[in-house]
Length: 340
Image 1 (cartoon, rainbow, N blue to C red):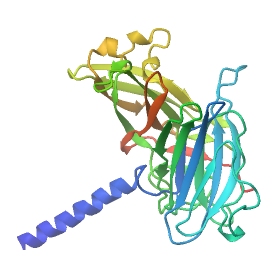
Image 2 (tube, rainbow, N blue to C red; image 1 turned 180 degrees about the vertical axis):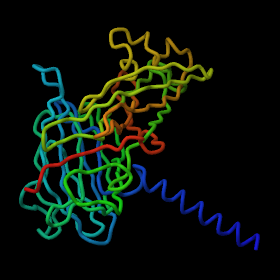
Image 3 (spheres, rainbow, N blue to C red; image 1 turned 180 degrees about the horizontal axis):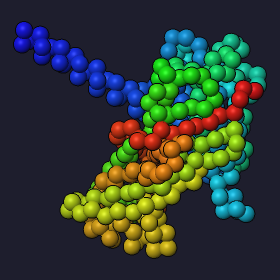
């Protein structure tokens, strides 16, 4: 009897733990909404996008390039959106270069196995890409099937920085409208805490002795494409060094943000930043990032993020996925336009 009780207890704990994991965003499990926080196209860089269908049946997806570049007149992100559709047959991967896209006519395969045209981004773009699974009527559905990677390539140095797309899982409570609720009912919630293990900026690499720098890219989970209203978030940072000392900072994200660690709290004098080696005196740190809740009950202020670690005067780098912990206390809302 005792053995039976403990057996059922183990099963119950496994189910509960599985439920918690299923309701969180992930970089190693497929989802219904796939987010690439950083896509870059300019004179020296370009981005390769890889998306795969992890299921045994055909799927359709609506995708949105969201431009986060700063408008020189308003000094705010432009929030210009380019949307398109793709379709993937069972277990099919697809790939394109962001600056070039895909042509209307497939050059190398039957039309039935072609994902469809993808618009080129042109000479300059700095922002994100989101792809959402829909049915043939373009209604959002909860089919956790999308995985992907983005690779940023430097044309001059030939260095690459690759990261996994962030998958938001669709849940049984999805009502199929164009307002996606990331509340643990329709879609998984955005993370309550983002955890980053990093070198402090300008810390000497213990092997190469060259300085190390880290950059973070943030995208708000919420946003309204239909009415051109970008999401925003106020982020709270807790930074711990190797002496267990704790310092804090804050940072505001409007639509999209890409920043060096040491410019989060001190853009004019980075050496006085709490993220700088000169201030901390230890090589590495751990940073916990929390979206600050507010009185707005209509939408949350969760964020998704990736990190990039650079060496040799930023000529060599690597993409890093940030760790996500728990579900955000405020549900986020991402609104997409009606069907084409």
